Length: 278
Image 1: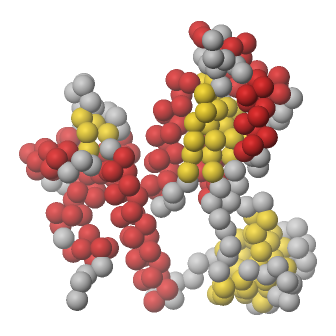
Image 2: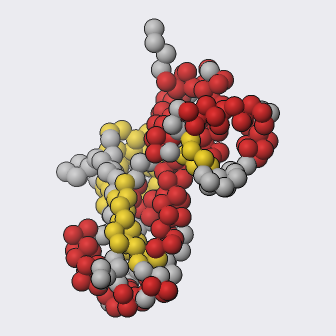
Image 3: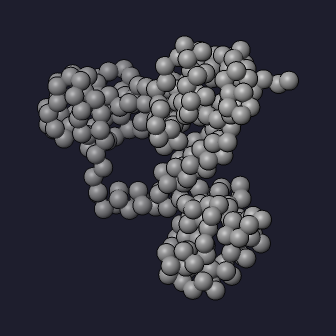
């Protein structure tokens, strides 16, 4: 019988070591020291060097022009993301077999007593409890505590499937102050992008972004921890638009990729340049 991929990863020491190295590179790229990875996963630096050469040959890892400059290739990112998903699925299956409870948190829309069965729906990326006979019920669960309307409530023994689709992230790349800042941003184009994307949340990073927000007479929903917040919001089905200066775009993309890896998500994102074309 053919073994499942997650079994191969867990049973084959070489495959698991490759997985660990890819994960460590993702966490620390582009400044990756082989000695640090050696210390972290507990094998010699000579062995790490051999793995780096193998991963490079397989098209999963690439080296930059400077020393200790390594990063995952698109293929490497896809491979790591897929392995993380399979491991997450494996862990969930084990939890189900061992009957390890997972508490879901929701907002009550009516008074609920401990042990009462309630319906569960999603709205704006938030879980809400409703009567079990509500026509919009996506799943049902058992309340783990008393709650009045508007209060938080824990749920267990969920039955049914929550219809939670993933949202997207649109990054609007703004010109830096050296390139004119908000004065050289294509405001009509930005307005069109907003109308087409229809964001549920808007994030802004830096003074140029704030100036653009002021010109558009918008109020940002996210001002700090934008990369992490955007991924969390998108994983709850919300579309997030972010204003960010050009030089920070690559850093944010890297952080989004890292958050995707850590949470086994696959949040899609797109970058649009908002500088006026001369």
